[in-house]
Length: 610
Image (cartoon, rainbow, N blue to C red; front, side):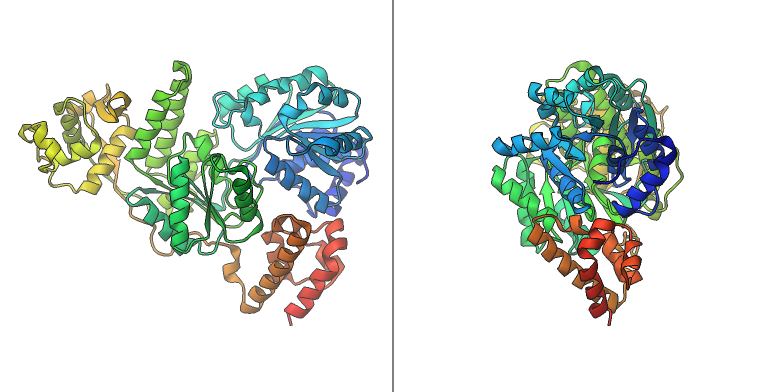
């Protein structure tokens, strides 16, 4: 257990010493020191910091500096297990208390906690609220309370968890214990809700940049989504770990099976699977390299895997917060990663239908519509994706040069006349038909349905033959996204006019739209990793280190990245340290890991670099 100090004069050197010797980092990043200092001196804090930005250190280090045990409230078992395993590798006394632990194991853990033998205790919110646990907390010195994934308290958010609402008891019952709430995702409304519900009105707010510059954002028009996804994986990320998100369990199963038949090491994950299969697949993703997991959004929040090289969406998320949270699981190690999404009119109709048919009250539905519209704005934007994304979170930025729109600027065109034709077709068919039928009418097709409804006699029949079907699909999608038409969910997605369409139909409102962009220009894809610049001998050494790491992980039954992440291995390969002193300067190698693995690493480097 590291030395615990609580005098202000010695705080910084002691904190820096723990940072170096325990965590293997030579310096604090961004606002980390300010947060550590504030918490160590007993202040409350709300921390907004992107995934991979070093949030965990903001409570782990002050937890070590203060007297007592740091109690960390975390929502998912897998997340706790990963963090505890990583902390134990650093030589810290950490444990998790959740529903996976029963009987005598619970008693032993509670005794260790009561006796002050733990540096950090991770606990699920529902377990924390048990009377027995609260009484135990009353009798035990607590360094601080850390509320991770604090956005789960927001009833307006994408990840609401009712048990988080009870966490205000910490302020009422333990007023002298500092609290820190942390999240990577919170718009201004969610921030205020966190403050109000967790009684953090006096907390200091720390807001880091939401930018993840290593992630390249790309949103493509959905043509043949599966084929587009496969091409993306094969061309940009062969052999890489990745996550593919789908909206339904059925689609997850079908997509995972299809990708596997195409040679991708793909596995499914969703809440409908039996527990054993789900756990097995999650463990494979965490412990094996090159696994692509196809999942619903039930997967991911508890995943601490740093080397996910891409996150792909085959279906539209519900909000920018959801999109940011899910894409943020890529590239947590700081190396290049991709966030890729295919997007079409059916996605818009489906999301609107889900909102309309939900049991939510009208106020909540309006919030959901507003959040969906903001996401559609990101999808349809002709400007920098990153600028648009960061603006949503209240952050001003400049064009990034590293998204699809920056690398291949989309063209816009005057779509006023085609839009008027589309709106007229909606009106002339009595607002009772979906985009597919309307396109057939505009293109003058002779389908059975058109003949049945005598739509071949309408003035709009055949007036759109100069535009191909794919372009008409994008026109109708953008019509809905821009608010000139809306789906009628009681009529199976039939399109209706909106108040905004009147000005277009009477000629007083011009309409500009994006042209379809098939793909990024050749050579503009994100590098799949930092390994592309390695020499043949460096690549050989890297593979030998990975093989050694894999064996260590198997022996200890932990994910490989808990031993060392890829970024640390790359430093070893490029810097080739020849002594314990040189090893200690590698980021991610603290005193405990140096003692435990130093001889083995130096031997591999000695023999592998010859």
